[in-house]
Image (tube, rainbow, N blue to C red; front, side, top):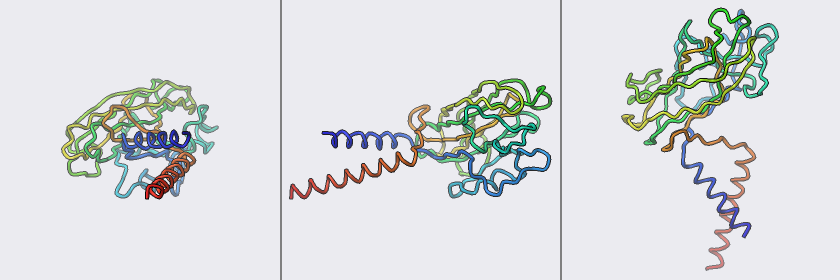
Length: 257
């Protein structure tokens, strides 16, 4: 009975995992050849694409201006380093300016006939002491837009045909580089995509300067459905259980024969 229950549980996990397809996940923890800039010691002097070579085949980040990589645990930002009391950022995250350069980031996918492209991420404002310059006092507000991209090109706005758009905001945070992460899940309607190829555009529209981390992007027929990425131990248990299922099936066939 216990084995039968385990089999049902494992099959349920597999069925649930198949309900949505994870297209992309990235926690930005493995930049290659990170070199801090000479002036802003917490920021990389290299573009995002050159730092993250461990991307899926053919994948690139497409952005206007910078979209920087922040060295959260480097200890040099704001004189005494960033502070991450929630411990969500790890060692690295992405930074984006609101209006001084109007940074935008474009990610291109194929939803393969699914109705939604769902996007889960953590966001936080980054504030300087006194709130001067682009480092505003407002809570960060992002616009997530989905564009049709029938040619599947590397772009930030597909072919310019907007399929879906929404704005979401995070919590405010203290000055001097203190992160206050908010987890957001954006559900974007991809049902009108010409052939499944779409471009997800990210734009900070309020907050001056903000960080993003822990991307998980999924195609699904359900709005907002983003599977959890299993830990290595979970996958090991699942594979072991599936192996057990195969063994039971072979034994049953032997008994019937």
